Amino acid sequence: MFVNKHSRTFIFKRLPRNYRQFTSSSTEDYDLVVIGGGSGGLACAKAASQLQKKVAVLDFVTPSTQGTTWGLGGTCVNVGCIPKKLMHHASLLGDAIRDSKAYGWNVPDEVQSDWTTLSTAVQNHVKSLNWGHRVQLRDKNVEYINGLGSFKDPHTVRVKESNGTERLLKTRNAVIAVGVRPYVPSQIPGAVEYGATSDDLFWLKKTPGKTLLIGASYIALECGGFLNGLGFDTSIMVRSRPLKQFDQQMAELVAESMESKGTRFLRKCVPVSIEKDSRGRLVVKYEDLTNRQTKEEVFDTVMFATGRHAVTNNLNLEALGIEVDQTTQKVFGGHSDDHERTSVANIYAIGDILHNRPELTPVAIKAGQLLADRLFGGSQVQMDYNMIPTTVFTPLEYGVVGISEEKAVSCHGEENIEVYHAFYTPLEFAVPRRDASHCYIKAICFGDRILGLHLIGPNAGEVIQGFAVALRCGATWSGLSGSVGIHPTTAEEVVKLHITKRSGADPTVTGC
Ligand code: FAD
Ligand code: NDP
Image (cartoon, rainbow, N blue to C red; front, side):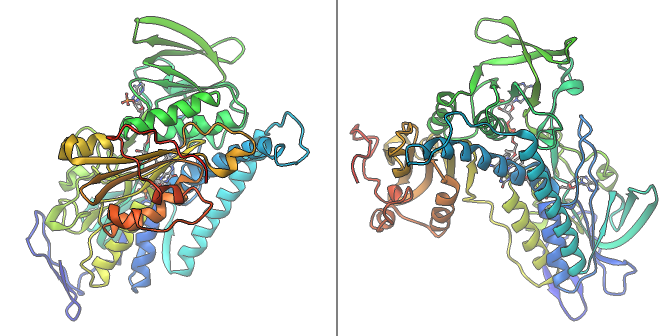
């Protein structure tokens, strides 16, 4: 897209369907209306406002199936990354307290966490972030409207405000940033009625107690990991494989490390029904797919972590001709060479709602900021969705950037892929004799090019963030192995990698 700053006429390289040219003489009240005040929407709205544009952002939280609601900031702040990371940290502190005895601290043999204290502290922090977002919007002159948005036409957004009034906002551009919500398989009797989701867990008023998590991806493993660490009896029901979309050797190590710390994995099992018994506990019937047997067990909390679905049917997209994927209901981008432009020229989609893009906060934020720069700052820089790092915040974290070993082999052939790997012991594990058998690193190389770097261990997210920059800049194996480490750290084990899988040599790091 080219922007002629003088006439403020927007000219598209290829005219898309529903194209409409508009100039500064148009009657729109806003330059931009953003529907959805989460990670992507807020970032885009603030960046557009910094470029002196008139911007409104709408945010409305539809209650979860269990009736939970929250404030401004979207999934990450209220029911995602932030409360999850704080509870993950709380669980790690338990390990640290137990380790501290070996380091000379006088602590009792048994320590217990208190759910009410923890969840209240987490919720108070979240509420402070809600407030911070409102203040930032006000300071940056972004109009915040607490209302449910939908389209009347491509240049008119209808808002049902929380106080019941309805408003129409005329706008030149609109961004759909409505995110996704937990999917609960409604065909399972009792699932919707009794099943909690990650939208509820961090706001539970009573302790979770004995908990069953259904699903075995990011959310189930992270929540299962911290609940077990906090002392709750925790089971994870796995339909196929844990972390199916990740490198399978790493995924299995993560699951094994959780099992070794007490999380129970009900492998190859699916839920059949949930009922409440006379004492208010949840009776779960489930099928073991290996022998087709139906089993029954009682839990205090059942949480579905069975994926997340887009709720786009209330936006009136069909009437505008905006294309959505039939299965996920997510919005297609990629029109007119712009990754985030929909099939309607002045409407864009960012974050989790964009079809076939990673559901991660930094992705939504970066896409939102870059979009504002393109729309109003004369930039032509597109979001780069390649080499995006991520971390699964399980008790032993799993950080990754780049592709899995399976993908590398299928793309380039096993004979052309070299995998360097190591089992290592973080120094701090040694004194309390903590089990380090799942701390593992591997670098996947194609010639001198590093295609993927995977690390399981403490602070994997922190370690991988630095290497992710290097890989994005085209890091090579010779560059990595020629680098000098920082001693004594976990990250130095990456630059010390030297044993290939092909050699069959023992990859266990010994000594200093
Ligand atoms: P959201 O943040 O979901 O914001 C969308 C907003 O729009 C919501 O407030 C919604 O209520 C509102 N809305 C919806 N429809 C309308 C409407 N019609 N009108 C007005 N408002 C509307 N990502 C990471 O990078 N790291 C992590 O550690 C991480 N942990 C996670 C843990 C959990 C448990 C979950 C569930 C997610 C986690 N994620 C993590 C993913 C991350 O939260 C999302 O990728 C991110 O929040 C997406 O941002 P978004 O702007 O696309 O949508
Ligand atoms: P996913 O879609 O990744 O996984 C869904 C899980 O539920 C799979 O294990 C799947 O099993 C299982 N499942 C689906 N339907 C059923 C069913 N009917 N019965 C039993 N099991 C079922 O979803 P998540 O909710 O874990 O994560 C969503 C996204 O949120 C992630 O992709 C990630 O981008 C983001 N996120 C990021 C985090 C981070 O950055 N640390 C943390 C948390 C979330 P199967 O494999 O057999 O299909």
